[in-house]
Image 1 (cartoon, rainbow, N blue to C red):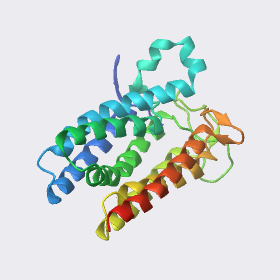
Image 2: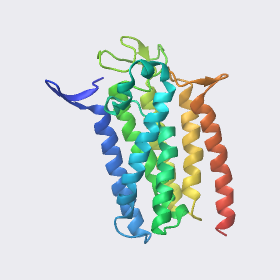
Image 3: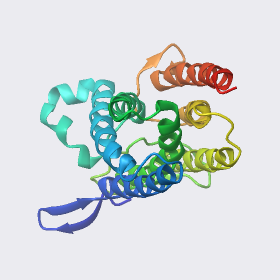
Length: 251
């Protein structure tokens, strides 16, 4: 793959950052359109997106650095080099959600309604961002001999070089696009505020939990399950609880 889309001397444009930015912009445009249709006001989602993105990047990078503390303890300055790849989405979700909640609360916007919109576009942004993962070589898979295995050859790649690997970046991308499609369908039949958010927690955690079995990078383990898988179990349980709680409140 090509970690950098453009290289002119020391000037480089990282593919990871480009695709994360594309995913973010597409998500904001769709969220803004949905917010206007639901009467939340003009520019609400655009303003919220800034704080959610900022907090999400901090949380995602912090979680990634903690997962790879051995490496970053030797090269602490590289913890700041987010343009090279290395954002753990679960950390981003936690920090981004807190920032979004604070923003919507200050604006007097109902949290469940606002977060339904955010949750709807989030997997689309994540799926597009995973294309950047593929280019950068982060979140790589275990060695395999399957026909669709991929081999990274670029020395700047974050993945092992010259070894056929599970294309987990593509697995993640497809899982996220599937979640977006399911949430889009659910939105057409939405019955209560908070429904899309709760479904996102459940559907995303299922997809992420499954793909984790094919990941080859270090994410930390507790027993036979990776740390993200344990967090997915918590996320799914919370989503299930939230679904029934919000459904009762919506009656």
